[in-house]
Length: 587
View 1 (tube, one colour):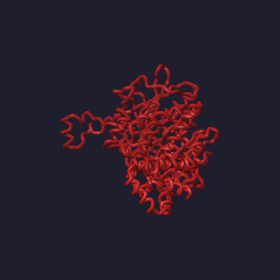
View 2: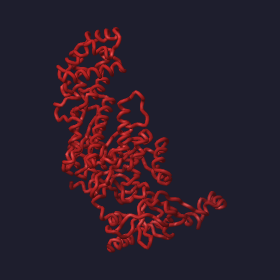
View 3: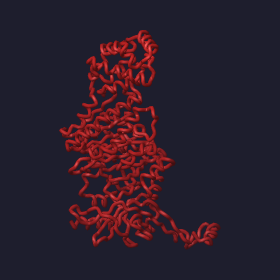
View 4: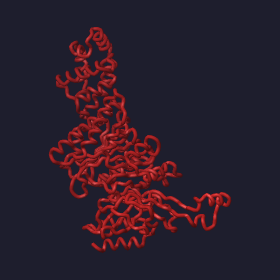
């Protein structure tokens, strides 16, 4: 194994030096005296490395430069300042006496030795002043991480630099390339920060594993469009679906049109939200809730199947049930109220009620629609452990797919709640059988589904939020991970934020309440937050090709970040660069 370290030392000898370790330095932050040959180059965000001895063994420490300070003690002298004010320049003082001091946080340390050539270590001492700091290149990273090349995945380049930042996304089962448990991931950033594209890249990183199942809950329909053959959206036309299929994964896109609801309680809740009872003079409230419940109960006792609710005979049976006095007494106790209801029932046109109010609700439960799958069948198909290459399921719940059906935000919440209930039940079953579910669920628009504050009367949304909070707490041990995509930090429920293990922060969280939330998550790493605030708005670029989508990441997502310090990178802004870096073109 000696040839490997020698090779790294050879590469280091040919690599440009940025500076040397200066004073004062500590194990948490190093001071760097920048060399004169490097002061004119861009240094902030640069990935740097130095070699040092610890316990009589060679170590290599890597980290990013987070800040550069300029000091000139002569310029700080009051007398000299007066002279400078008059002349603007003082020979032998201005520029020549400048010193540039950098700050560097160490994110990873590797010790020479071990079966792979290098093994993780810690910075347990501060190297002596004068220790050379080298700029990191792709060759250095490839050499250190050579045994793990198959696990490495790239989302972009080191912030403002050329080397690609190595990341790894391990599946949630045991064995090779496995993490042994699930991770919860958060991708945050304002609209246009590149968070959706980054989430799709991460999705492809996990799609490499045949035994990993992927579920996307897509309230806006963006992922569904990208998953269709040849489908791409936005200014970064990533062919997510085409690449996934070339990996051998089957993709099923279920829209509102072919997702079959399969619970009577869902029928009650959706009928409650519809205009059906509104037109029969039953306003929203306890009476309507009782009416929906008794109607559902009587239909079940009459052997009417959920899948047959769309038939005219099912509607006629429901209409007949509503005309019964003993049924009306359940939701209207006074004679006057029942008389008013009966008058509305007699004046109503059954044909109109069937086509306008009953049909759009009943169609959601119809099984003989083309390509239709019930929620139970869809989840069983997705999570079956017997499948050699487990598939990708995208649930498109966007409003534009619901033509001819009764659909609104509350119905969307009810359907999502049903999906999440089914997922949790399946995960618990697998866990009891001693198996890891090994699945990732992508939740787009997470700030809408699990907000910090909700109106009291919005029970549907409250149910979704409650399940997501509980899932974030409990499903990690089941092998079920969640990827939350959100425009904000401050409006997402605090309990979910606390359960996330890996974070990606894009542009737009550097002000006000968002920045306070960011500071709480990152901790007291002041220079890291200062560097984050330097992120440019991607849309301030002169053209699309020059846009930079910058991100700060925290968590066990990189072999260069096992100390927990933030890493910074610019995501690829060209599809070809992303596909080529990860060998996805050939796939």
